[in-house]
Amino acid sequence: MDELKALRLAYGEALVELGGKNENIIVLDADLAHATYTCLFQNAHKDRFFNMGIAEQNMVGVAGGLALSGFIPFVSTFAMFGTGRAYEQVRNTICYPNLNVKLALTHSGITVGEDGGSHQTIEDIALMRVLPNMTVIVPCDAVEMKKAVYAAVGYKGPVYLRIARSPSPVIMKEDYDFVIGKGNVLAEGKDICIIATGIMVPEALAAARELSGNGISASVVNIHTIKPLDEELVLTMAKKSRAVVTVEEHSVIGGLGSAVAETLIGKVNVEMKRIGIEDKFGQSGKPAELMKEYGLTSENIVLECRKLVAEKIR
Amino acid sequence: MQNHELLEISKEVRRNIIKMLGAAKSGHAGGSLSMVELLVALYYKKMNFNMKYPQWEERDRLVLSKGHGAPGLYAVLAEKGFFPKEELTTLRKLHSNLQGHPDMRKTPGVDACTGSLGQGISIAVGMALGARLKKINYKVYTILGDGELQEGQVWEACMSAAHYKLDNFTAILDYNGLQIDGTNDEVMSLGNVKGKFEAFGYEVFEVDGHNFDEILQALDIRVTGRPKCILAKTIKGKGISFMENNVGWHGKAPDEEQVKKALMELED
Image (tube, rainbow over all chains, first blue to last red; front, top):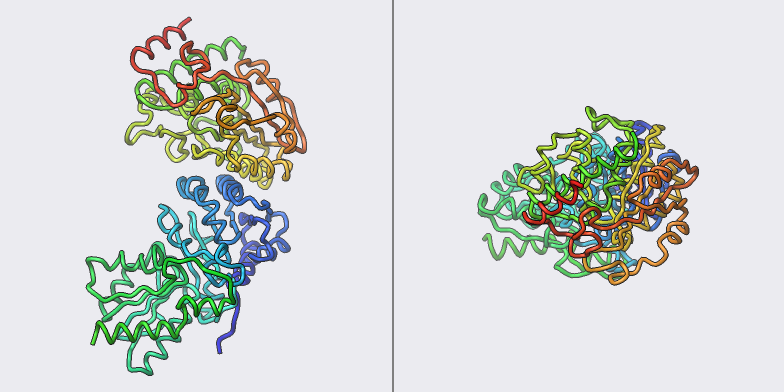
């Protein structure tokens, strides 16, 4: 059994560490510092933490002004408010002038759980992905989370870090080399290529193991950067496979599945299936119950892959 | 520099606003003309900057939160020498450095991208906070439109400037009373604007926004421990008889005949 750790906790720890190394890092939060774990940074670097109150639009704007003063502001709140409530501020204040602001937004997707559909973002990747200048990163575990925070600081320009709430398996090794825009192949197979992002990566790996027992050989690709997408890797893997399956804790519209389909279209003739939330809102429930309800489990990935093989390939 | 020189500069700025809008055949006349004295006071008497190095870190900053007043800002920046005046007639044209709304990536001297109302003031608050963190004594000014006060974000920003006691921050209201669909009161009453800013923790000064003595006096007063707000009573379309206080000139450019007439009025 893999160790479990919440990505948001890894985010908070990475901020503390980086804050000690780089004086230009500033953290803004909107009255959710104990949920986003920016409270760790607040404790460690008090003079560079600013609570902006429950006012996300202004928070994003102030971050823009701080970036224009030479700082690297991290903006944290729930993904719902950061990408939704403040969408036009992210567009016009941050992306339009290409400012060096990092949106590190937690409680993304349905694993927010009991708070229910009003707080579960199923559209945030889509919203951020269509903005010119924006980089979109969805870390798959606590190790990758920390590396993503470092990479975001090293990169000049707007970055959206999509950070899950619940503890999830740690699957990446500490010495793994994280590069923005470069996916990685976690398992090699020849029948199906499962391309996953975020907390669905461990589920994809479990599904691949299960499938091999059923005589289906599946590769697993971790796409942590949805934009810019590693098109080269996606095309290479698709050409080697008889079907491509994308998996994300996000709507099937506009997220990883769409990005992969946009890459493949006209270039590789391959069967494709997108697994994600089917154009509907979430609801209250335990994270694990919701993942099952919306088909975001290794069992469902196995089922869909087997169906694809039975109906389309053999 | 005496006030009569500032008045002459203001006249020239107004002439250039009219010429620019006439050439562009679109743009916002009324709100560009109403804030001319505010901009001239800031750029000629108050703000510290270096035309050769527009990005100089220690400069004072102006964020034109009412970004649709861009022609007014461009005319002043060109008058100051940030870029050649000949460029003014490229306003709003393809590949121009002078976008319909201010673009810091394209126009020397423009400190922020603005235009979507309510957002500029937040950027200005961030800059003021940045000055404090960098321990640099620059000042940050923002000019708001009165219709813009209807945006909730303005009040979020106001709250944060007061909370963080940003006394290097001044919000200036171009209070001309008109917006696209009519008067403020017809569209959405602003109520007691002075009282609102005071309640939000600002030191508020009321001035005639076309009177340099009053504007400069209010700009010069030192306020400590809290942000400053200058309510500048202005006339929309100021300086052109047929545009003054006429709501129809919010987002309209003069045609050839009107340009001639306006320039004649500005000759006197």
